[in-house]
Amino acid sequence: MLKVDVLLSDALSEFVFVFECVSDCEIVSDLISDNIDNNKNNGSINIKTLSGHHSHVKCLLKLNGKDQIASGSYDKTIKMWNLVDGKCIKTLMGHLDDVICLLSINERTIASGGYDKLIKIWNLISGSCLKTLSSHTNSVLCLIKLNEKQIVSGSRDDTIIVWEYLIF
Image (cartoon, rainbow, N blue to C red; front, side):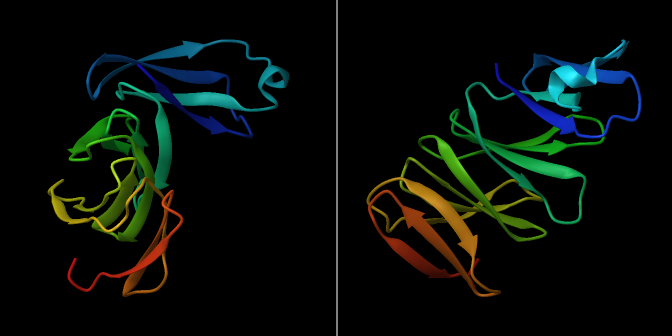
């Protein structure tokens, strides 16, 4: 089980929330009041730990206009997290290998790339995969949004592909 730590650089209190994974996407929290030596963590305090992935977390994405993030993992999944309560909202499954990169296309759509050579376009509301893009011959390592009509992917196959996404 892997933990993703969310750090606060200027601690305002001595309270730390500790989250323990009971089962996939289920979090139990305990409030611990301690004397914390801020110098041990360079002035940072772990205020939440989100657990639920079954392998390394490779990438994170803040979701537009929400207190939510998405995480991509070597367990081949993408998880959507609520940062207010620390709970997993959804698990997106469909990649055949590790998820390496995430990109926000708009408030309801993200893209993911991975070692399976695929780019997947996801609807965040339904959790469904809208489209799979498959022109790369090796791992998709990075994604950027070029403009309102195009995304760009970079791959271990030494290529960069510009994709039109009007059809997403």
